[in-house]
Amino acid sequence: MARPLVAHINLSALRHNYRLARQLHGGRALAVVKANAYGHGAVPCAQALSDEADGFAVACIEEALQLRQAGITAPILLLEGIFSPDELPLVSVHDLWLVVHHELQYQWLAAYHTDYRFTVWLKMNSGMNRVGFFPADYAEKYHQLTALPQVKKVVLMTHFARADEPDSSASAEQLARFQAICAQLPAERSACNSAAVLGVPAAHGDWARPGIMLYGSNPFEQTLENTAALQPVMSLRSEVIAVRDLPAGEPIGYGARFVTDAPTRVGVVACGYADGYPRVVSTGTPVWVAGQRSRIIGRVSMDMLTIDLTPVPQAQVGSAVELWGEHININEIAAAAGTISYELLCNVKRARFVWQA
Image (cartoon, rainbow, N blue to C red; front, side, top):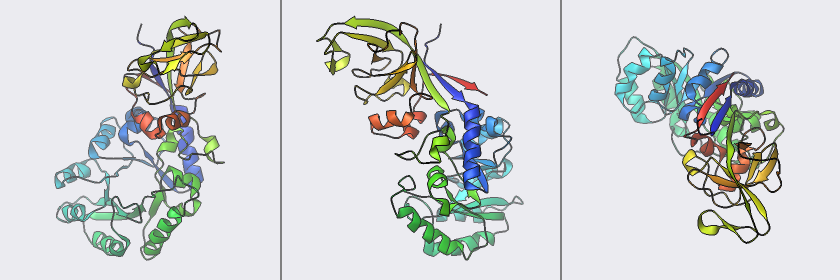
């Protein structure tokens, strides 16, 4: 019998969320499957979307080659572009699209002589101040790229820093900078990540790049009209592996952070911070056990955590526990940990993954 920690991946929900992203945005959408599809398994997720996705986006060429080796033939965009000119032959052999976001990448491409013609996504730094060409230099770089015989097509792109903050004016300011320059350039445009697809309709363009919403996680702190339709893709589940009945005044776990204030029925669950569940969550963080909601009590340890079974009399050894998924919103766990759902999903390990069509 294997350890009962399992990450159930609902590929039907993944397809639903992709269709929702495409419908809300209009135009075409690259499914972002970088970082092992945000911890969900890049190959099975891409295969599940292969019949309908307009293409995929990854961080780097290693991730792209993994998809090509698995039989994915759709366009794949390298969001960070190339890290050295040695990668350009692989880009051409495997027919990948690449982002150009700094001068060296442009120079490497310009110096590479080939009959292959590249599709380039030219990134503007419209206010994120991470990577990309400044607006003042953007049009010139576009014209330089389109003049290269080895470039077939240029797509214009930018990335929002605060699209997940609906009350901020930052996205509107970034969009205005992007649109002012792009109005002079005859090319397709892409500005929308998940939060912009859901909350910045003015930014919708030719291409969307949905990421976290594909996996059913709301990128906003609050629920918006569109986010209610998202379906969670990962359910992290385990089981109760021991039960203890303790009187009042008994400490539980490392550091005695929780002490029972009444007779308490305690369940031990096979999941801990070595599995990616955040150690920093406090007593009261929700779990779903034996068909109803309960709470974590005490400190999360490396391989186990403890939960309150006092209000769940039907629970026993072997009872099912959901750490997040269909019944426990992952954003609740992220808030309790002071982080975001992206990090939790990417950190899952040691669990057995089960992909369901």
